[in-house]
Image 1 (cartoon, rainbow over the protein chains, first blue to last red):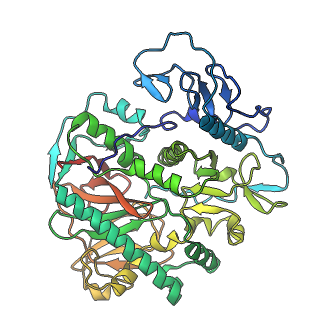
Image 2: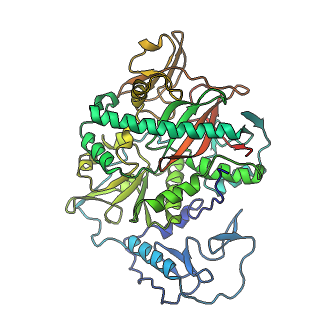
Image 3: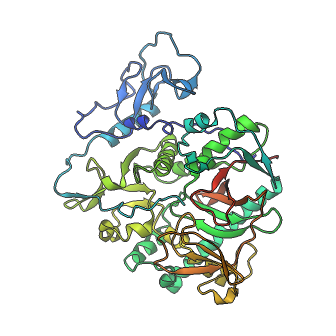
Length: 132
Length: 374
């Protein structure tokens, strides 16, 4: 058996999902994520995504996010029907809290705002197609 | 090896788009083409896998020889890049992936056409799209494809810091390839951040590369060839080595077709190599003339018995050419497949087949899914 047992995608297929991975320099900093904190369903943490209270972790799409051809996003999986149950707030697992906090920190704007001391566009001018 | 004609799945466009292949159709027809597929035998898959693993070892040995014998000019490596390459080689900087393009007819040993070792694409279709096609079309069959899992494992195994993912924007193939690799790193638990090459900055005070938010870039996956970077404005900062790039600088040695004559010189008569030289004379009147650095078959010329039988235009060739014996490419109803074997973290991990009615694989060559019966 040489094939993958499972090929699941989290980011690919929706560029919008990357909003959770990038950051805007002007956003106020989000508070640190901890496993002792209780979070409501779909609580958003920049860089980590949306908290799915049933799954005790953060995901790139909101809970019950609908995408044509895939269904409703719930805890990293696509379901054919939306979950209409009332979803109570919960606490994240220590691992998911740690990962979300790392991602939040990574997405926090740097202390130095983009300034005259930063030069840009020094790469990317050889505009062939990269395809190889 | 068999090529089967198939009816494409209903709504195949929507299906492939849902898993990231937004560039499935060129203006001249489909790029992702499931109106046919290839069936391989278990033994043929083993042969391709073994050949790729062998070739990778040979390439590493050849790269070591380039460094040891100072054969830099044979690869047209810029002087400024040499210490950076040597340092990355000595550190054994992590290499994520590469793709061998092989000629294979199911009988004779696969032959190396080239090694796309720096910025290989056609990854989403090989790793993801054809896997989903298999689930829909030949659920009980197997496929030489553990690329996705191996990528995730590779990210888990090497390093723990944040990775910036950089590519050229406004190019769907590039954007989706970068996004897919970011996806696999994300699934491996790595902290990732997306930027574009145009947004990469050099911070004068901190003396480091920074992203759009002026955050330091410590590790960057870049879908952008090293040889271009060395000719651009920020090239002067690369020798400072403030950032680890993926692929690492030492992959410049493997992605260069100048390595083909070196491989042949070091391993004459090897069954997985085609004779290759730095001049055409040893090959008589029949050879493939290839630029040391080019992509998608650009500026490749095929000569048979002294006559040019096929030529691709392009703007490569400044670094010179090498000459390789013509490969025997099998033909199926006028279509010629080339077998792209993916290397993930130094091991063969999957296969993507592209075919064309022309002899030179180019931008318009179609991706054809495959399966085999275990």
